[in-house]
Structures are given as C-alpha cells and as structure tokens.
Length: 302
Image 1 (cartoon, rainbow, N blue to C red):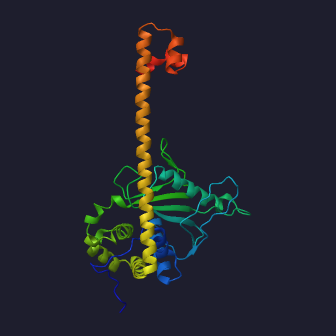
Image 2 (cartoon, rainbow, N blue to C red):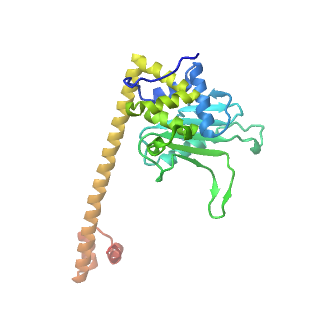
C-alpha cells in the first residue's frame, strides 16, 4: 500500500506563499511537482491537462521601451494553450491592471508566423491572492473574459484572467468535506497548510486529493531542508518589510494630501472674504498666489 502523507499537528510547515516555495512545489524535476502542477491547472482551468511544458520566465523583448517583466510559472499544455501562474501575498493597489498587463504580454507572445488568427491559442493568467482582496465581494474565484455588458454578448475571447482570493475562504472552510470542489480544496490547502488549528481538515483534503498529496510531499521536503527553510523565512520577512514600507508611504501621502487640501480650503475661504469686502482682484491674486481666473471662479470651491 502507498504511504499515507500526513502532517502532524506539531509540525511547523514552511510557507507555500514565497517565490521559492511556490515555484518549488510546481516546477522541480521530481515527478510529484509535475503531477501537482497538472492537477492544479486542470482544477482551475476546468479542462483536462495531460502534459505541461515549463517555459522561460523572461518573455522576449521586442522593444527597448517595453516594461521588463518576469513571469512566475509560465507553461504550455498538451493542446499548446499557455498560462502564467503566480501567487501574490500582498497585492498592489493596481493588482488587476498588473495582471491584465501580464496576460496581454503572454497572449501576444505567441508565434504567429505562417499561421491564421483563428489558430491563436487560449491564454490564462492565474493569480492566487493570499492577503487582502482586489474584488469587493465574497466570491472566491473570478474568471474575466471580454463581454459586452450593455448588449449581453460574449466575445468568446481567448484571454482568461483568473483570480483566487484566499481571504474569502472562511465560509467555505465550514462546508462538509464531501461538498468541497477540487478548486476549493486547493485553495484551502494553500491558505491553511501552515495553520495548526486547521490541520485536521487539511490532512483530510490531502488524503482525498492526489495532486495535493504531491504538493504536500514537496512542501515537507522543503521544510526539512535547513537551507531552503532559511531562504523561505528570509523571503517572508522581506515581503513583510516591503508591505509595511508601502503602507507607510501611502499613509504619509494621504497625510500630505490632507494638509494640502486644508491649506487650499483656507486660501479659498480667505479669497471669498476679500471679495466680499470689495478688495481688488489684482491685489488678491498677488497675495494669494491664485490666478485672476481662479479667483473669479472661487465660488465653485464653496
């Protein structure tokens, strides 16, 4: 009988969220990585993926002004369709725009020489978001395609942007294990595999899902490798530091904008008072720094 893969309640598993661990789960030369990747793709793309070929992470640059980008896990399947898979621990303020850019870059990177437009393959950008949300609802998975909302017509486009927001798993975690979809099982694994309080349900999912068993096998190997473990912990710290720095910058920017808004409001109120007193517009302009046109239109600021 095959050995049962299980994580003990006391075991401190490394985070699957870092660049190193996430890529290691899916891209090593070991058969369990390939099997986990095929299973993961089949679940979220809702298609049978039989074979996966990993591609270079650096896309070809056609223009020196192109923004330099690096895909996380770029791959092509047995039907020559392609995808980029990534995990974002702390999404940016413009996360959807960033994802769309990556998807577009991957889509137009297909070789078309000697081919018809009808031969263009479907392309997928699949992003798992750990903390925070980028879409204001309670839906775990979103799939975006071109759609004419006014006329309710789907373009049947060949680019697919898929988001998996792990912060929306709380209610799904309460579901009966038998009712969990394959996609939900993968999401729960990534979100809670480190969480000792939810170790029982994670172990039940591992036992039930072959692909997740293979991912767990790799994650346990990484956990036992001291060099890999130290690298992953360092990546976690760096990611958290970058996030904290970005928060401080945003707060400082909002604070400055608040002050500037207050100064502008005081200036406009002063101008309106001087106008009410009959002070000459030229004098007000020289003292306030506002143009004559701005002063004449100052009532709009009320």
